Amino acid sequence: MPKMKTHRAAAKRFKVTGSGKITRHKAGASHLLGSKSPKRKRNLRKAGMVSNAEQKRISKLIPYK
Image 1 (tube, rainbow, N blue to C red):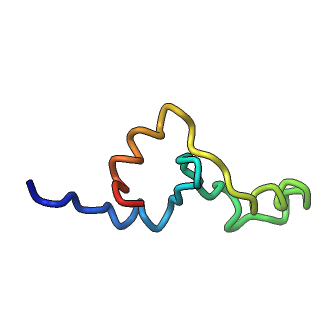
Image 2: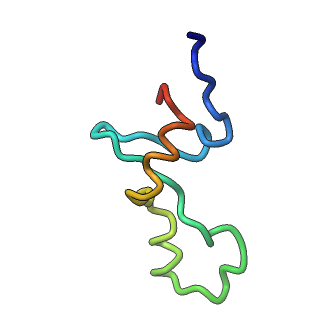
């Protein structure tokens, strides 16, 4: 059986932690930042976790990460 190919777009967007959870970047931090509070913008810089419902689907896209 041939090796599986990694979905390159997914590999650039998601990272796997040591415990096997998948981290992601939060949406809404790229533009229209003037109306957002400093606290909200600061929290958008932190990594978010992928929900349990999406974890299986994304892990198939990045099999070797």
